[in-house]
Image 1 (cartoon, rainbow, N blue to C red):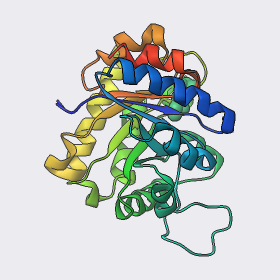
Image 2: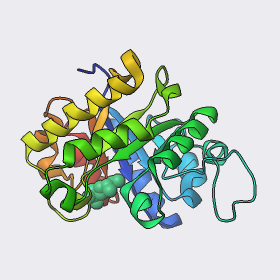
Image 3: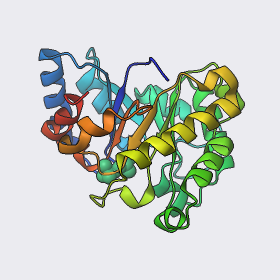
Image 4: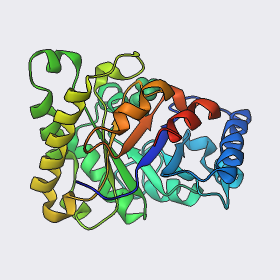
Length: 249
Ligand SMILES: O=C[C@H](O)COP(=O)(O)O
């Protein structure tokens, strides 16, 4: 069981232009006035990291990228390296989100390479895993997620700060969530796989839950054993919604 501070991270996905930073500014004002009982992060599109860093500079709110390339530099048109993400002002980076695994063919090995690159750039990776609906219905959720953890976490993470996010694919953006028992079962399996992969280094990092987290369900989900925070999509786009989740910690 981890003693680490919970982490509430907002993944804006491919949403947001400059004026969206007003939501980040509003979040900052609120959290300047009432300190959060947890770590709080916003992960905007890469184009907004720099301006978000200016908007949030000096506040406790952390900033994450949504992806990075596994190579340090080179002929990879359209890609962004971990060093670029860090240089723009982020200290975290989401890796292996199911939308990248499914839409861009990312494998566990790709994700592990990206995690190595993130570590080299001084970024804290948030490594995502999760089963599809077909895999859950086939009774394979625990085995699929455990294999993703084993394959996506490089052993070099053992003594470094990082997080794993369990996001059932079928719960993302659907309004559906697993039962609390299902969340507890998979989080326990993720923890076991982290320890199997990293030894004692797998015991402490937080395991986030992601998938249709909102102010109305955050409290019960965050109270589940081994749920060390949340990776929030849609409900992170508006400061007031995101604050509702932060206040549930
Ligand atoms: O990264 C965030 C997850 O994909 C969850 O998205 P959601 O909260 O919109 O379901």
